[in-house]
Image 1 (spheres, rainbow over the protein chains, first blue to last red):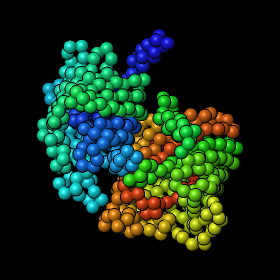
Image 2 (image 1 turned 120 degrees about the vertical axis):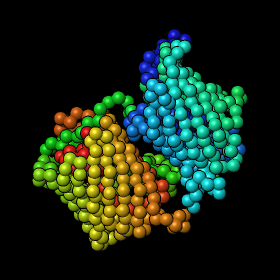
Image 3 (image 1 turned 45 degrees about the vertical axis):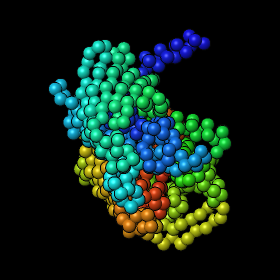
Image 4 (image 1 turned 90 degrees about the horizontal axis):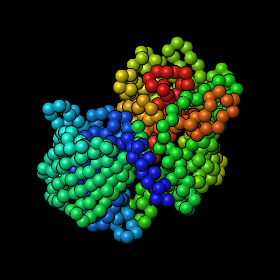
Length: 236
Length: 294
């Protein structure tokens, strides 16, 4: 039995070709903070995360919530995502909430300069049509500018990510400002990624793994205490 | 939903998530009969309940017979197998039963159809395409239809509604990208205009987004603006079988999903005359303008 499990793991590693890593929104990113990495051009990602209540925005309920998304990278310079959060009203009652995410990369990473992206998350706050205002923001509403630069040393690819974001929702204002993180992809298995990030009010650690060329798993440890995780299928 | 139905849903979902195979064009040579089936997925979100998503899933078995000379006879049924919407939707029904003929003359393509169409319309329909240049085409559709119901009761209204659409399509081959402006009169006698963008991936998939406005589009109690937007996803299914067999059994050629931010069930809707109609393949089997199903 042990041998079968070992063989399965080895096969998964050999077949692993997914070198991207998604945030819980379906867009490329770190764990909680955005990055300037982009998904594979002409790909679609379908997945979901189970998020700890400390991970998701304030404003609706103080309970863990599952999210599901469909994200697309039609060109190498743009990504968009549609996500539904099932906010828990109580132990047996849910409120589905839709949100949209968009990320555009005006500058591709070069030898001497980082990639730059601008993005918006959940811009439509309410049916009344408020956009990124403090009156009626969406729960995830924020604007961001992010930069990423990769270097190759110490048996892997190191990514350095910096972002500046603005949350109009006052409950999440601690996430506004400068955030960022470091990622490492080992040479021996590039679909694996280890991440450490500062998200504005604490530190997250995470691990991503691509399996079989289309499956993607992510595990997040927030503030060394709270676990979240997700699974995603990438279709190219 | 029972456990069996849930497992069936998961299996269908996984079967959609393509593994590496090539989508094939169907071959419509004379005498060929194609049996195929797809799934019609409907869902709605409901807040403040223990069941936040309600599903209505139909399996849609269909048959196409190609007698030759670009004639086609199509029959498609819709059998509900997961129904959380209520009793009204529990009946199996005929979705499409239509006879159609395609004609080609130079850069012009025509398709004439008659019979029962989707969205419970019956009558006559004509479509045309003029491929002006490799990057620009004009398309049109004019229909003369009435309403029918063949579920728990049989009812037919008079065939007294004339509808029509006109589209200008622009295609950029290098980026496999298309822009389309469509305007006209829709099946509930409303008028509308839509601007759409679509990116055709080199394999299987097309994605798109649109902005649209119409004189009865949207719900004024929710928003005073009759302007909406949405997204589209078309997934061409592999495993289309051997196109040289006289009788073939296969899954439907595609799965098509349209998301409308306004969730308007009646604004700017048009019926389909073919069970496999989609924006990637187009309406004319021999026209290769744009991506043309490739």
